[in-house]
Length: 184
Image (cartoon, rainbow, N blue to C red; front, top):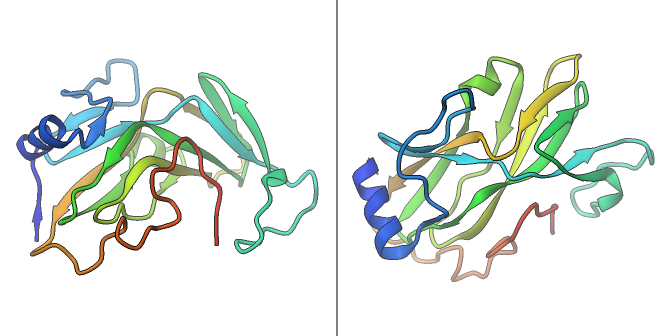
């Protein structure tokens, strides 16, 4: 297995439109950085947020999740309540090659503030906007910025194409647009 470089990422963007829109260099002056890096791509968070709320006193049930657990907001900044979380999506739409898996790690700028970004791996053959979870681990409100860096995506080439890709099995999150809530 090999971690793939900026050269490979650029090639796949040109040939396969793997990331759209694509920012071909790092931007970060007075912003949380985003764009192409040496061995990955720093994706941006969109300006549409779903802020978790317990105002309805619902049970959080992954098999029967209700959108009533969230307040939707469209803004340039989102405040995450203390000890809570927000869902958002990437600005970028990804198309993952069938012999590649993508691991996502949160930006250190947010981690150093107690804001953790969680994303499951992007599987071979998957495509869509990535749903991001921002957890505020602090007892204070925390701020995240739309259209700035959220997480770094690292592309790893497998030794061969798997027997069944995400698209082959018609995964439930295939071609998702915007923030996608849990499905069973």
